Each structure stands twice: as structure tokens, then as C-alpha cells.
Image (cartoon, rainbow, N blue to C red):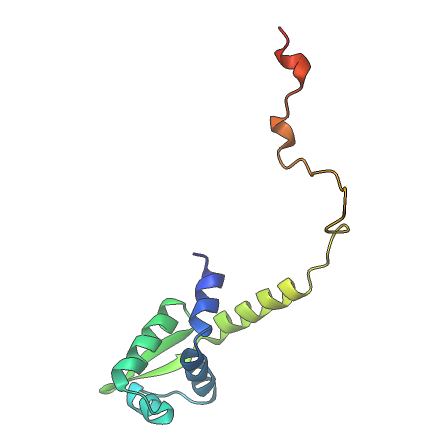
Length: 117
């Protein structure tokens, strides 16, 4: 799986998306995030683990607790890739009736004359 799809899958869950939006506003520890979202601390930890593995969130040990923040560079890069995707200009006419099939592998084309001998 590519970094792009890993990050998109991590953000596709509503709870993880909410975690990222909270962490964009303020750094939080697991306990504070659990209170904000009204879910258990182990559930928050599992969501953060997935977000960390996608590179979207990073943790910093502060005393006894680890405070989490968003890796903004990765998030900006993800946003730029989505913008490039959205700005992709269609080429050709797409689907047409009676359109000749595209030759996807021209180097593998062999004519009948090549096999007559």
C-alpha cells in the first residue's frame, strides 16, 4: 500500500478524522482526547497508533504523558496530492461507441507474416 492510500485510509474513519481536527487546534494526551471524544483511552490509543503509522500524527513525551500533534507537513503533502488529482485534465473522448480498442502493449504486437515460416 502506498503512503497516500495509507494516509487516506487512516483519515477515512470518522473518529480518526475528528482526532486529527482536535490535534490541529491543540496538542493533547490520550486521556484528554478520550474525554473530548467520550471514548475509552485504549480506543484512542488504537486510533493514534494507526494515525502514527500513517505518519499523520507524532507523539512527544512530556513528563509522564505523551502529547500528540499533527505532522502538518505530511498533511499538507496529502492535501497537495489530492489537489493534483482533482486538477487532472481528461484526455481524449473517453467512452465512445465503435471506438477501436487501444493497443496497450504495442511492443508485444506480432503480425501473421512473422509466423508464416
